[in-house]
Amino acid sequence: MDNLSIWTYSVVGLTFTLYIGIAIWARAATTAEFYVAGKGIHPVANGMATGADWMSAASFISMAGLIAFNGYGASVFLMGWTGGYVLLALLLAPYLRKFGKFTVPEFIGDRYYSQAARIVAVICLILASITYVIGQMKGIGVAFSRFLETSYDTGLYIGMGIVFFYAVLGGMKGITYTQIAQYCVLILAYTVPAIFISMNLTGNPLPQLGLGSEYIQNGVASGMSLLDKLDQVIIDLGFKEYTTQTMGNTLNMFAYTLSLMIGTAGLPHVIIRFFTVPRVADARYSAGWALVFIAILYTTAPAVGAMARLNLMDTIQIGPIGTETGNLKYEDRPDWFKKWETTGLLEFEDKNGDGRIQYYNDKNEGFAAQAASYGWKGNEMVKVDRDIMVLANPEIANLPDWVIALVVAGGLAAALSTAAGLLLAISSAVSHDLLKGVFKPNISEKAELNASRVSMAGAIVVAGLLGLHPPGFAAGTVAIAFGLAASSIFPALMLGIFDKRMNNTGAIWGMASGITVTLLYVFQHKGFLFIPGTEFMMGMDPNWFFGISPNAFGAVGAVINFAVALTVSRLTAEPPESIQALVEDVRVPRGSGAAPHLSAALDH
Image 1: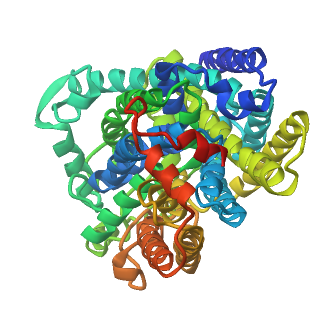
Image 2: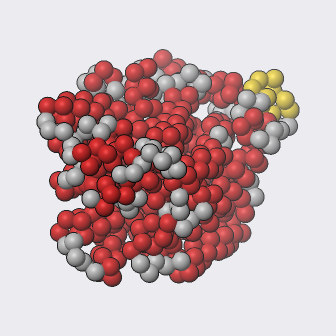
């Protein structure tokens, strides 16, 4: 066993021991502890746990990979995922916490005085959460396959077992404290390598500043910025300019960002975290602290993506383009290359038989013609999975073994933390909202707790099996989940809080129409999403509605939801007076003396 393997097993083993120990120590004994951690979490701790819950495999593993290959265009993820938290903090978190229910479907069922509305909300929640957790399973499979140097499928099965143990045992109480530890691991794992690499490439220890600093080549200042150097390298190989590349047209960029923002504010596994704090004001503080903790990673991600792409290109293109010695010999490929080949996430094909690796954009007709004159017969890096870039980056940059091991532990922490939160949201919807709320209102607390654990175990199995063949890279799959939440849950929550005239008929028709239109659009264009290893190119399908990609269509679904809900509610009967009073009271700050009906309305 080499030094890297020893470091990796040691660091990952220690972190897993910590997670499992916390899960055993904080295991849930009641349904209140299982669903909302007994409502006793400090807002700073809850903000940290929310950050870990939020910064999933898509954030830690996949987002920088997207930025690496899509440049400026991938900023939609940064803007959407952080902007969504502002919406959540201002428009939803304090009001939902004041309402005081365990789950999102429970809020919708009570606010819209309808079991049918609750059931529709459960269906929407499960569809969005299962889609989201598939993306986490992709990240778990990627991280474990590299950590154990095995196939992606085997890595996924092992990861499923780990999630099963601590999520099923601890519930929200165990998950919360585990996620605090996981945040510390993942943020160190993300920022420490970024500091090392930024120092190597620019001499600046802050990656956020290093991104725009002067590029240092072989210890000598190059006279150009890092981004200018990256633009030059990839343009010379036929790729699009990094700093101006977009993901489709302007409308698609806007719709994508909006879908991610309102999807963030509508995701149940995030919203449920604001029920774990003692007071209403703590919900708003939690959202603010979560944004701070998230910003540390999100402001680092652009530098990580750009530096990873530059290091990758420089590793393969070692000399002047078109010369005999310009490309890396396959037999001389570094160890990190060989290990990622083992996972099946990195593949090479020697198309011209010269034993060297040609990595260029053979879809660019102009450059492909030029490449043919060099004797090149096509791009030979036939698969470079975007989700490997963050984990491979420290190895490509020849960082110390302990740093590489820390990144593996961080990737696993990110994927496991969010998977646990999502699985809890799914199990709560099944056991609390369907079983207790609809089918068996008199079920005992112990039976409900057992049902929660059984439904969580079932969700792990389903998500894991779907994760064996995910619909693309982790962040792309997660974007679809955000679209489903944006088109169904977010409008129902917003209208439930801010429109006292909104009735149950309008809410049900709105949710059903929004998510149906979004799903139909996604499946109509599933060919784009379900081709493994394809280039992530946006705005290429002429059949897209105004050039809006399936990943971004949740924004359109949300508009349809709002329009249908508002129209139907105005054409049907008003809600009962007690419900209208409840809506008024939920929006009034505590202590104002203007909320006399709240407790009565909640009891009603």
